[in-house]
Amino acid sequence: MSEADRLAVASGVPSTTLMERAGAAVAKAAARLIGGRSAQGARIGVFCGPGNNGGDGFVAARHLRAEGFNVSVGLLGARSQLKGDAAWAAEAWGDAILPFDKVPLDEANLVISAIFGAGLSRDVDGDARTTILRLNDWTRRTRKPILAIDIPSGIDGSTGLVRGVAIEATQTITFFRLKPGHLLLPGQMHCGEISLVDIGIPESVLATINPQTFANGPALWGAHYPQPNVDGHKYKRGHALVLSGSLAHTGAARLSARGALRAGAGLVTVATPTDALAVHAAALTAIMTRVCDSAADLTELLGDKRKNVVVMGPGLGVGEATREFVLTALAQPDAPGEPRAVVLDADALTSFAGDAMTLASAIKASGKIVVFTPHDGEFAQLFSTKEGELRDHPQVELLASPSKLDRTRAGATLMGAILLLKGADTVVAEPNGRASINHGAPPWLATAGSGDVLSGIIGGLLAQAMPAFEAASAGTWLHAAAAREFGPGLIAEDIPEYLPPVLRRLLENDL
Image (tube, rainbow, N blue to C red; front, side):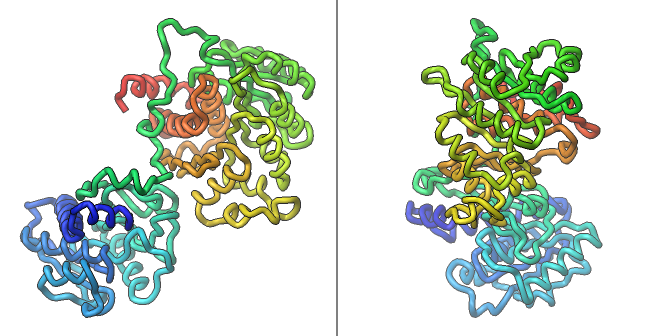
């Protein structure tokens, strides 16, 4: 964002104009939060830091005062230390500037937090820490709103991490583009409602900045989404093969297979051990079954190169047999110019715990399209550094980074695969660093088996030749959208059944 501001100024937009527009937008948002013109005379406290975030606060205060609101402004530090646009904004305010602890809160109807912006890179301490704690206590006690400028003060805009303490905002107003900290946890939980405002930074600056992090949604991958054609048939839509575990662990594979079918795969087969065949045959209708007791059986199944996606891991079991299945699938030849895709989840990853380099070598030798879908625990197990080659790998520090973006990118680079790190802020990354962050997933997705469905949805999209990064991102988004469509009380079996209305709106460009 600093570069975006610089490029905007270089293109002829004065920096004070950007600040004026930002502050005016904040003032409008503040007026809406407390009732607009009907609330003239309401009391507002504005807490400004020493940088440009504070400058935006001074501008907002000036506009609110002009609208008839009773505004008090506090400043972190001495006014004489303000520089550049922040000093200009304070001068234009032209009224009393108080220490933070003198800004009255008892009668305040709204607080504007302009202490630190998205560029914060150190822990909050001193008066700023005391004030943030005071404001959080005030909003919890009174249930009156805090409006954050750019990002809640105390949130690292690059990682979403809390730098010691952070404002608990009712609404956050930010400019030009969202920052990772708005979407990643725990920052996402501090933002409240997020509003994005255009302040006149030209779109053309993006070509120079070349951002590699994207908010996940149809705008990112919609152009690659497989569109059904009138002359299409099931063989054109791919054939997904889902490996099943033993008799006592068959449900996960069926959930995954159902997800693949609902996502549009033309055919789906569950490869099942002999002892579980009867259970699957009784439970499945549109999904086929084939016996697969060994790696040799899998080799035979994959001799049919029309089976262009393999999903393995859900309920498969942890151990040597699963390792052999994974390595066998990666070793099979592909149809010319059509590399088979492999989705690895759950047990398929945990079976390589502490031995990620063996799996990475097999992936890179295979030339296949591979997508990993771990949650944090599986990620930590896979990339355990207690033993093995990984201890001295150049990516090892990033794999343990507190930044979810950094961890996911490092894992994708190390493995030479698409890595999807699950959670309420699922991150998808490819080895070249491009990443998407999903946001707005409903909390009821945290239910047994939902991850199995996700692996199947991604497999179903890959079967239709959707590019891997886009398929993983789209699958994540669709998974969450189907859960929202159902609502509270969701169980994993519901997710595939609630994909159709979401897909209908997606294909009708109504999302």
